[in-house]
Length: 134
Image: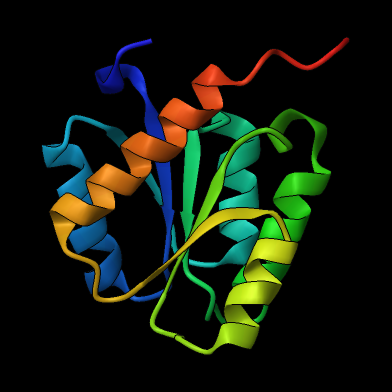
């Protein structure tokens, strides 16, 4: 699969930030889908099965940790890597995100090039994993 075929779901309740992140990823060659809250993220992810989810931790109603847990508990999405992208810098929040199944934790603001690098590295790591036993 080439990078241009890879789909990233960007989840952030701030439309401006979501647009900036989505724009950076599109310029990086990714196909991007977007969601503004947890329930929408779960719906979009279940329908489209993205290759990676970039997930804000401070969503209204259902926070990013709960969204990550639910993504990882959904069989079709369990192997989709989730990268937390949050303005929260506290170690406890980062540990909760990682414990919920996030592969990485990035803090905002994240330079576009660095964001695309982390997405590429995370996707490459997934593609090197052996397929799960069926």
